[in-house]
Length: 254
Image (cartoon, rainbow, N blue to C red; front, side, top):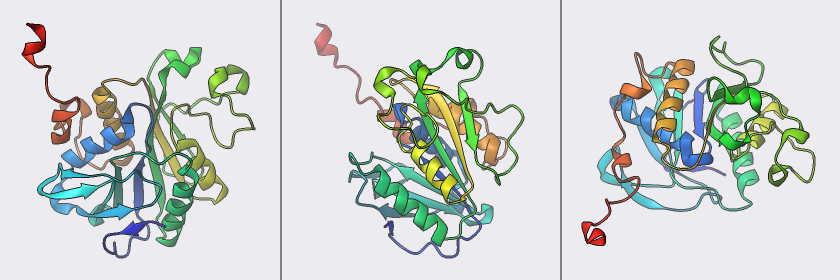
């Protein structure tokens, strides 16, 4: 089960945003941008524990006087919004347990919609996915109207998948290579009639800050969390300053 540092109160009817640990950590970088640019005076936060998450502890980039653990939740009550942030990954083989407990909490809390933010391997694109936007969405029935500019994730048959990504058994959920728990949590919510939207981006491992910025603008277009927000003109998260460590020492070039 999910263990919260303190009670969140009545969150029935709230929309929940969850980043999926996926290619380039784009979903988590996107959440960094949103948290950096949202009105922090409205944020109520606490730590969340779950045995499937790799434990970590470190300084809080939003509050220099405190520390954080592997997972936090941020509540914006006047917008009926709950934002989760994952700062580490899931332990091998523990994805199903995390999904089961997260969905159970969502149902018990009587939340309204679930939005999962993630990414997919860009090298797995088919021909028609190479041209145009690299952003995709996938929604169940019962969710809010999707903007006309959004492109729905195209279905894939097994004969268009690379051999190393083909499942040994028929897949349960859409084909989202490198998407972490995205496909399985979508399938679970579909079975339980939970409204869910996946907001995804094709990308590759490397410097994924641009992917995080583009995803944040995509998410905000769908949710309007931050008025007049532009990903390319947003405040850069303080935690990104040390994303790749210190600069190379000049001594190595002597």
